[in-house]
Amino acid sequence: MEFGISGKTAFITGGSRGIGNASALALANEGVNIAICARNEDGIETALKKIRSFGVEAYGITCDMSDVGNINDVVEKIETDFHPIDILVNNAGGSLGTKDTISTDMETFQSIFELNYWSALHLMKLLTPKMQERKWGRVINIASIYGREFGGPSSPYMAAKASLIATAKHLAITVAKDGVCVNSIAPGSIYIDGGTWNKFVDSNTEEIVDNFISSNLPLGKWGWPEPVGATVAFLASEQAALIVGACINIDGGQSHNLF
Image (cartoon, one colour):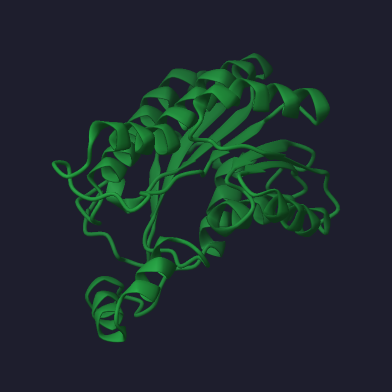
């Protein structure tokens, strides 16, 4: 299948590891030039070497996406020093160990929204008008099954991811006529070194971990990043031009919603 996106440029937030890095590599495999940002400079350099091995151009910048004030400068630097952004992958996020609504103070709620929602919204508002002008663009938001249904311990994370999915749907309808496709992906429990589920495994007994897997994961094992990255590449492609405002679960059957 020809994806038809060779020579395009993608910007992936949190692109140095996990789902973000899997997305970067899947897009690079299709000939897409890649810009990534992450908080750790060493992680960026390692990721860029892998990306360039596909024969595409790659650009990295250090940035904390929870600081929304940085975003204008990051985008300006990428589009000035590298290329205009055709494909936006909003991947940066996390629950940061937060819990229920009552026990989470307002400041922490706000910080979770800044990382998972406000930064993504800011990028969408900044970049989709440029995509509309060029009559082509893709926005892919990495949400969560916990933005579609109850699950997990974190109320602010659920709320932020639900907001991200809803905003993507509304934006998708607004910009579809201009050749810009906006969609979301809702991963399930994806195991990443240093990630949430890695920490869950390290901080619980083998019995608790095995019970979680047997009770929640029909495949009998954790999810992995590459299927998410492959779906990102497909949604960015010309083959996905009829997919508008969707939210696609990639969870091995973990979620319970029907729609």
